[in-house]
Picture 1 (cartoon, one colour):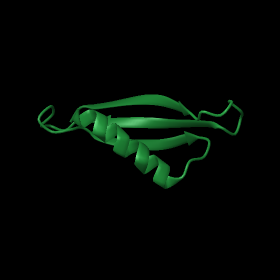
Picture 2 (cartoon, helix red, strand yellow):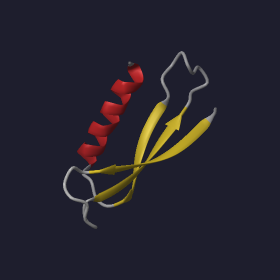
Picture 3 (tube, helix red, strand yellow):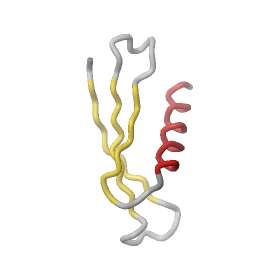
Amino acid sequence: MRRKVRAIRILNSQPLTQHSLVKLVLEVQYTDDYPDTLPELSLELMEGSIEDDEIENLLADLRRVVCQ
């Protein structure tokens, strides 16, 4: 199975302060059937704080983009 890991930084729309920075790692795992099946996506919090449901919402948005 091939594996790629990319780091992304997500900032909120408020002025940047030490407390508003959130850094996540997006992991993309390609299946053996790729591109016939979608890759598996996961997010890991590296810095800052974010609720679990917000992470799930981000993943859902990413999956919708991947499906397009």
